[in-house]
Length: 231
Image (cartoon, rainbow, N blue to C red; front, side, top):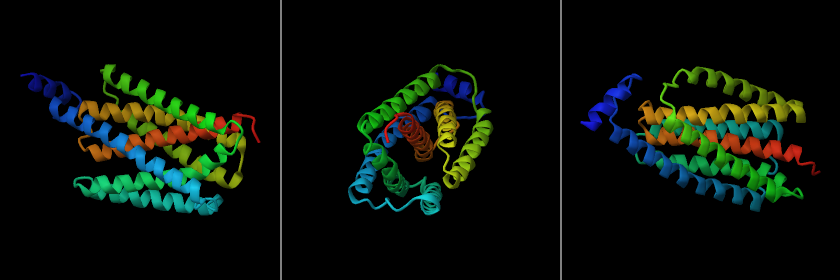
């Protein structure tokens, strides 16, 4: 009876998913999201220890990052309905950690580098906690946010590409602040999609939340690094 009521409530948003299914997707997403952080840390450590990404600056770095990221995301979408999708996702998070290592190495070389990394990590965790809490108490359908957030993400994406060649610190700060705002809102949107039954694949859900977290963390690193005052 309870599942029937919950299914009817979910159907108000255009979905027909039971509470048990939604809870299972959310639970599996949280577990896989936590697991995905391990390859990210490993990838970042390998990148810093070996310096393999040190030469990936400017246009070359952009090409490698975008080419690798889009190839992995395409592969994840193709394998998301099988066990192989988990492996591909974890390989993707290792790649993202590797790509993050160049920025981490630069920040850690600063006098207050370790503090900046810990602050960025804590800030990202706080944002996720707030958005996860909001997603459980907000009752209205947030699916309409999707198109506006997508437009905002495109603005940030192209702005970041342009700034790679312009090299403006002010431009980087503005882009980072926009990125934090947009992807924090994306966290709320993606979590609400799971809770409301709009997302039923935990691999796709994990990918979306991972990208939200990665972008917020990276943007906080950039912003805190620029404003720290260290050379």
